[in-house]
Length: 289
Image 1 (cartoon, helix red, strand yellow):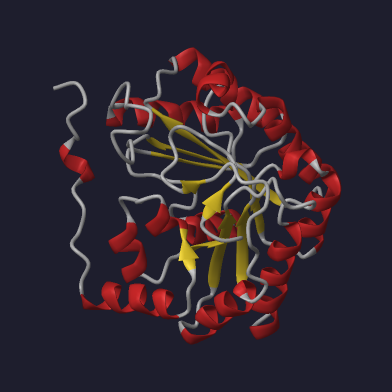
Image 2: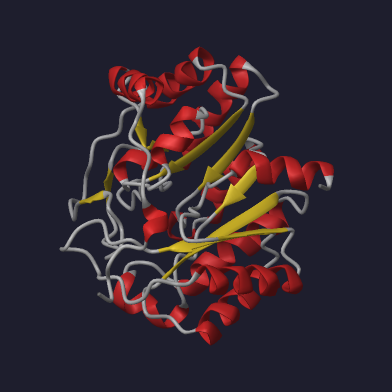
């Protein structure tokens, strides 16, 4: 069958350690995109103390057709101002040395949620200034002041995902804008030329190879340093259907093309996600491995 899940998506059953960490997150009322977006790597990542914390609640104001995170059209949503503190305490309890912070998109907030990012970064660095932090930010509706506030908080890596090719934005991301996302990455480098930037594409949505390469070229033109490419998996039957399962060979081909275009690192494979092996990639770039 065309949409039958390939064998390499078989997931590990959560063991006692993983269940314990899931319970800790629940007790602290801390969200992760790992759980909310049904990531296929959840068990292996949690087992190795790798989390992608999701701030600004668990309801997104966008309506991207591929995303498993809960969505709402409400003009006003609640904001938990104690959320950054609880995340910092999780980092302290688990003695994390590398933290990934992402968020839902909050178009209802005047700063898009930038202040919450800043608070979270500052509280984690208050525990240990040597903890490396990767932030995966929304587009802040193009608000450069919000972007600068996050960058000034000194994350180690700033990521913003393109998600898909330009042609599919109207179908899949009608509230987002392809050029705005490129501009976020470009402006990040203008604000801090030394900042490592990163983006991600999900494949199997009906894009062509030519469109993927075109998007990769756009990312490099806008000085994106790291690229991840992974296979789209529909969170439910209500979501946009998988159009194609990309072969492992094709993922390897995209990696070669990306490195040829000048990306500092390219992770490309069926189970790769935005923050997949984020710490390892950061170390490889830092030490030139």
